[in-house]
Amino acid sequence: MRFLTLIFGTMGSGKTAELLRVIGKLQENNSRLPIGSKLKFMVFKPVIETRSGKTTIVSRNGQRFDDVIAVGNLRELALEISKNAPDVIIIDECQFFETGVGNDPWHFTELIRELLTAGKRVILCGLIQNCYGGKFEILSSLCPEANEILNPHTTCSCGQIASHTQRLQNGYPTPITDPVFLVDDSSNHDLGYSYEPRCNDCWEVPEKPHPNLVIFRNALEKIRDLKP
Ligand SMILES: [Zn+2]
Image 1 (spheres, rainbow, N blue to C red):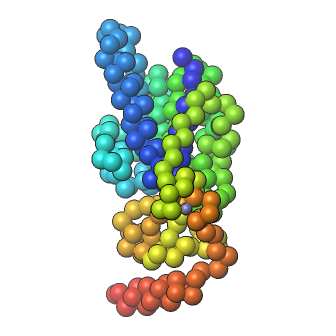
Image 2 (cartoon, rainbow, N blue to C red):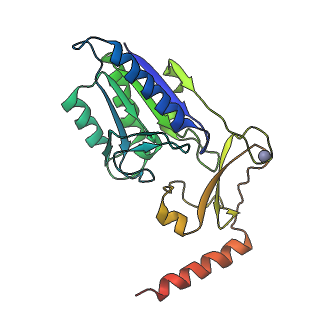
Image 3 (cartoon, helix red, strand yellow):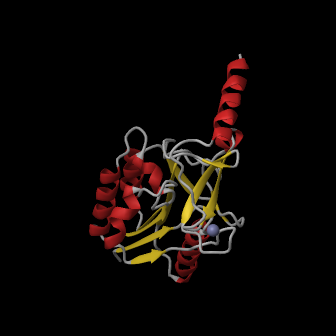
């Protein structure tokens, strides 16, 4: 059954909807199999991803899957897999296994290769490219070994195909000097961060923050200093 599926696209491209479609298909196929030959599948995500709750994956169009295991790091992921021995391993938001304590992109890809060698089906979803055009190692290094690549696209506000994720703060593109890893959650929304899909022509990566962004950030700092 060894089979590797990769699902990637810009933020807002519909990759989570695509992942949920693949999971739905697995569930449907399983329902037709006799008891005893049903496939055991497990869905994981990094605990850092809190946009859709700790045990849930929710697509932007409202579809959801409620039986997700959130793991703190790569070690926890490997432990859960060895403890439960699933036939199909599904991991969402893979790029977050490249950062944080106990995570390493090369150890992650090694684990995936071991699972494939053991005959497992593996489905990975996430970002392949960061908002500054650099690559995320996990999905980009596994591309040549993938048996299936699902790469949904959405459109830029100008109407062209979006091929990048644009990070904005208070409406201004953030500069390349900003950190790559920033979770798309409510605490960062409060700091004015948002994302939009953009085409090659509209995507911007400034070298330095826009002057208005500097004013906005200074104002934020002052508000923070006022807090006890
Ligand atoms: Zn555009």
